[in-house]
Amino acid sequence: MRWSTTVPGPKSFFLLSSIVVCVIIFALAYSGDEKIVKAADKQAMMEMVKLAPARGYLEAHKGVEHPLEIVGGPIRVHVTQDVGGVFVALPSVRRLDPNVVGTPKYPRAFGGAPLINGIPLSMRKVEDGKYTTTTVKTPTGDLNHIVLPNGRMKLEALDVTATDAATTNDQVKFEATWQDRDGNTYGVTCCKKMIPHGNEMPTFGGVVTNHMLHGFTRLWTAMMPTFFTYVAFWGVGDILKNGEVVDESRLIHGMLTEYIRTEGYKMAFDHQVTPTRLHFHVMVFPVKTDAQGHFMKAPIKTGFMLPNGKQLPFWHVMFENLKIDSERDVSLSRAESYDRDGVGSIAKLARYHISGSETTVILTNKLTFEKSVVQIKIGDKVRWKNTSDLVHSVTVDPELAALKENVQLPNGAETFNSGDLLPGEEFSHTFTVPGTYKYFCIPHEGAKMLGTVVVSS
Image 1 (cartoon, rainbow, N blue to C red):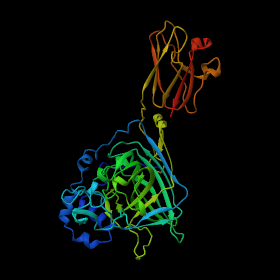
Image 2: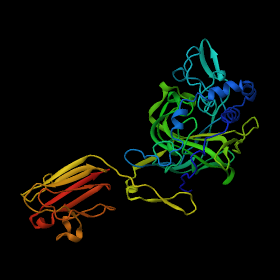
Image 3: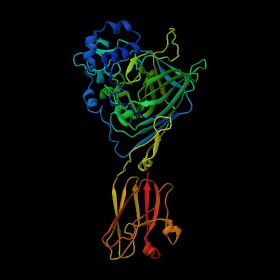
Image 4: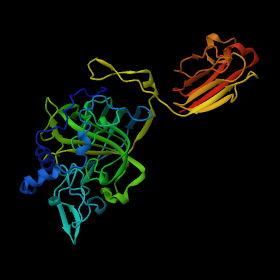
């Protein structure tokens, strides 16, 4: 597995010369009912795709070469499954939630590429004045699935870039495997490239954390319910069977979400989502990229055969025995470097300034630090102000201390020293490493002018 981040031009991914290509790709590849799709009015489909609600927003972002970062600094997320099975979705129709799709009289969520964004009216079954199910089978159906053994997965994601743009610093390495009853092992690896910019729906630079997706948000398919997503990614990766690559350069989407399954493993409606339980989805789309990053139709070679003798045309696999860890990556405040393309070229990420609240400590004539113990959080600043008539210092350096026990730093933290602070002068320091800091005043160490800062994570 390799860290990877994208280095495409500003008009690479998702900029297709014809939106109809996207429609045909998703509708035909996902469904088992090609006759229904072929009978649809292609011109109406083209007009439907133009109604994707995020199109204008994305137009404003596609040429951004230097996108802003998420507030508070980069977030790393680690998700693993070491034991247990997986749930694999099979082609099936999807029951339609009126809260998302509306009614035949007042329809919603019909614009955009069919089934991957909106749900065309021609693909909705109507009974008793209500929408009931889709008329075609999809990978987000809820009436057909199987359970397979030995599911393993590992995700390491770094969310840096806030919005869609021409470039991104978001990064992902991901691998997942599972087996069939005959002992064949199937897998997915990602990401050779991140998808920094969407055409109909945002990708947030390729990785997004702590966001609402799907359902009524119209951020990706309305076929799924609305749910809070703790981390999601969009990238290009490979499909494997028994350790061999059987298909490559596929669009892969993974996401850690609220639990969206109900009795019988049916896909939930919005009011049935379980907020206190999580699961992870990996989806492999039936599209491929050319040298310019354009998508083109290409059936997926999953190698997994269905009972009808046909090959499963997509992967939608769910993992539920998860271990999850995350952190605000303050180490990037020191411009840590990453291998961007996996072949040794190094590109330094921008410096990230983690800013938070500020606490003031007064240096007094009584040879004390007022607020001798200060408790703060990572990213907070402490400002020392000398209001006395004396010269003081704020020093965290064991080499300058008469007694080593008067100084303490957590592992990874750097020493600092204000130097002489004359009456009226100030000194400040922002703390980016958690732990306990013990400091002293050089001129008055012998008088026990000592202080402590406790930084929590």
